[in-house]
Length: 103
Image (cartoon, rainbow, N blue to C red; front, top):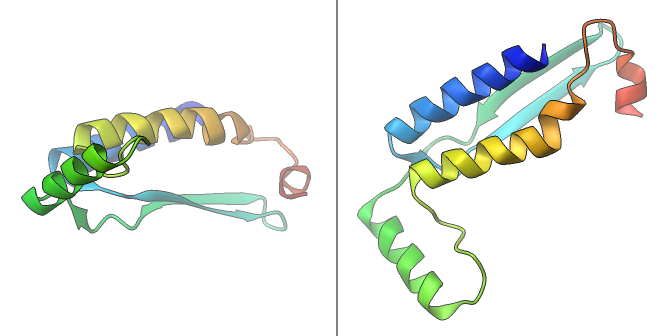
């Protein structure tokens, strides 16, 4: 299950990056009664436009923090790393007790 989810995240984030889409998130719903986990990428309507490029440049020049608006390819890489770090390791195996994960 973990590998299949990782492949799906990689494929979906590649598609979004190729279409200049940024600022998406992963939604997770766990149903311990039915022992199901549903995931999906949401909030994928933000296009990386020239306006976003300029906004990122201004914020980078005026802040010491990393820019929040980054290119679609950089966003894809950051998203994948975050999913590997925070989520993929928590995906239950087929026989896992989902109630323990929810608690």
